[in-house]
Length: 127
Image (cartoon, rainbow, N blue to C red; front, side):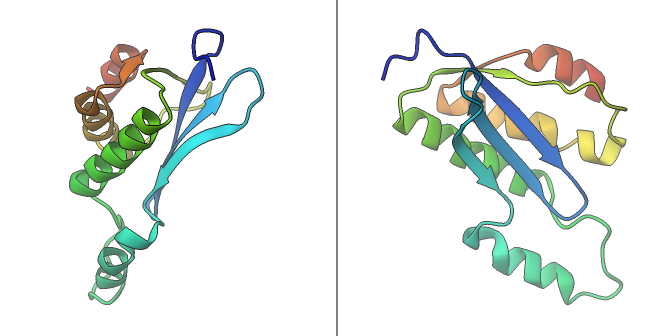
C-alpha cells in the first residue's frame, strides 16, 4: 500500500469519561488505526476510579493520554504510516481540563516517530 497518495487525518475525541484517537484515510473515510481509553488495558484503572468516593469528574489523566498516544503511534508505524495531519473540527473550544490531555498524547505519538502536522495550531489553543 502506497502512502504517498493518501492523506491521513488524526481525529481526537475527548470527554470526561474517555479519550479516543483515530486515524482515518481522507479519501475513503475509513479508520486506519485507533486507540482509546476503553481498551482492555485501561479497564482496571477506570474501575479503580469508579470505586472511589467522591467520584472524580475525569476518569483519565496525562499518563493515560500518553499511553494512548504510544499505542496509536506503534499501530501506525506497524502499518507503515509515518505522517498524519490533525483534523481540527469547527466547534466551540474544549474546556481547559480536556485540552490539557492533547499535548501529552501528541508528544507520545511524535516520540514513536510519526510526524504530526497541524499540532502547532492545536497546541496554541491549549495554552
